[in-house]
Amino acid sequence: MSFNHTVRVYWEDTDAGGIVFYANYLKYFERARTEWLRSLGIGQHKLKEDLGAMFVVSETHVKYLMPAVLDDVLEIETVITHRGKSSLSLDQKAYRKQTTKADHLGRLDNYNSERSEIGVAKQDQPASQLLCSATIRIGWINVQTGRPARIPSFIQEIL
Amino acid sequence: MSFNHTVRVYWEDTDAGGIVFYANYLKYFERARTEWLRSLGIGQHKLKEDLGAMFVVSETHVKYLMPAVLDDVLEIETVITHRGKSSLSLDQKAYRKQTTKADHLGRLDNYNSERSEIGVAKQDQPASQLLCSATIRIGWINVQTGRPARIPSFIQEIL
Amino acid sequence: MSFNHTVRVYWEDTDAGGIVFYANYLKYFERARTEWLRSLGIGQHKLKEDLGAMFVVSETHVKYLMPAVLDDVLEIETVITHRGKSSLSLDQKAYRKQTTKADHLGRLDNYNSERSEIGVAKQDQPASQLLCSATIRIGWINVQTGRPARIPSFIQEIL
Amino acid sequence: MSFNHTVRVYWEDTDAGGIVFYANYLKYFERARTEWLRSLGIGQHKLKEDLGAMFVVSETHVKYLMPAVLDDVLEIETVITHRGKSSLSLDQKAYRKQTTKADHLGRLDNYNSERSEIGVAKQDQPASQLLCSATIRIGWINVQTGRPARIPSFIQEIL
Image 1 (cartoon, one colour):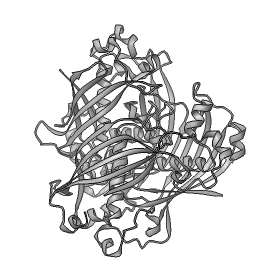
Image 2 (cartoon, one colour; image 1 turned 180 degrees about the vertical axis):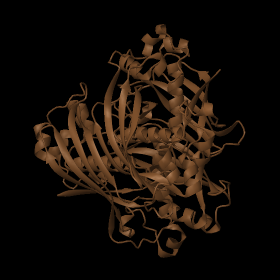
Image 3 (cartoon, chains in turn red, purple, brown, cyan; image 1 turned 90 degrees about the vertical axis):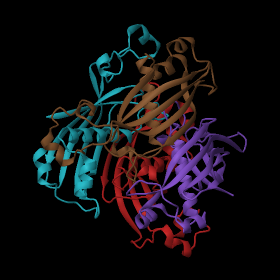
Image 4 (cartoon, chains in turn green, cyan, brown, blue; image 1 turned 60 degrees about the vertical axis):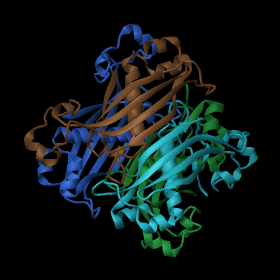
């Protein structure tokens, strides 16, 4: 079962090559993991305050297949592939979505075809293209000591 | 008339002080301006390709009133205050929203009260607090020369 | 008396407009303030751990005069203009330096003129150009409460 | 033969967990690659303008072993491990350096031991600790088409 999270490419994400800077996919993947945890009722800020512990990334393996550009809408797909006692493994993929009205995050109510010729790109690529594919390993650590710890059982059960 | 855009505070936005790093409000404000332009049918990526011109920020004046923290939902309010021939002025404000189910960007369908005790913070602050207030001046430049230019009339009309 | 700190423009700093993204000057200014404090023997990480307090930015006023591009070397000049009991004001300016061997941060030992034609830009602009000018106001806060506090006297004396 | 580049951890690099955000090591690695190329006389900005081509990252594999914190000085070691016709492979490692006067990037002229007690951390860890280890694959692409291309022979020779 996968969790999908949609992000928009803004100026801050791009570099002078005209494409999304390679480190920024890790930002998108982190946002998607946070929203996935939130969708399960797990809020990281409060966990850190209540338990003095947090998830940290221990390993990433990322393949950059195609570049994303300004204004692209990316769908980040997150699938859990391994649940250990003190770590998790996830597959995360970034797809460029076919842009339609509905993809504009609900903020294009007054969008109309007369205006589209001015500057909103006509998208005629196929439904979605895989741009970036990652395997991410996450551990659970005690914030004070920085040491790995067992993921609390109530979190294990939710996952 | 104001345009509102909602952003979530992620790990990437915070710093070791536990709060949103001051430069990152400028990222939120830029996203809000982009979505405001998009809501008017103006896509900056295509404009740059078609016209060889783009908006650039020429001046910012930002007051940081209260810090935002991880997991906060911020509403960015954008109001145009001056329309010149080659520049615009905007007021942009970041409010912390009272977090409710509806504010979770539609991704908390399976959120429930049993789980909320685990890690999703109970928010009992008032409806919204002003965290950061900015005046932003934007110019229109030719990409090749880097020089200021007149904002095209069809864009002036839309604005 | 001014404090000067040199930064290099990397891919991470630029955006698809081919220039340094406007928020990133605030990163340069922060680095310069940190190095200025360090030059006075003030380390912020340890201060935060020892005193539970830290400097935070309360107001910024930035004028963007000329864009910086990839590979530029910028000199950030920091001058303190006001010392209050719980706040400081600083002027910070970013200049593009005339690039010479010496400016390459000491990492161009094997740089030579035969190679320079391949890809290292010949810089023939005047000695330095003012790109970005800022007024920054900084307060001192208690990390736990987030409230403003008096800057400790031993820091006041150093400043 | 390895190339070493030193970076400082600033507020911008850290997150609310008190450590360097995982994506930011990719920024450090990119800076180190840029300085390594520059040390060979290869400037990427001018290459892009002259040849319409640039290096892009096609794959990263990163292991996060120990966290870096604010004010740390990191040494990034870069070693080329494979030279192909249209791609390169590199090993990049981030070490925390034992902080001494000399490590402070030459900006601590007026640093002294009386002041060190105020806020500059006493570092008594061993000479250097490996924090983060990466394998990076880089390709050469045509900027217009985005397609892989052969690395020009004069660059191959330099590398």
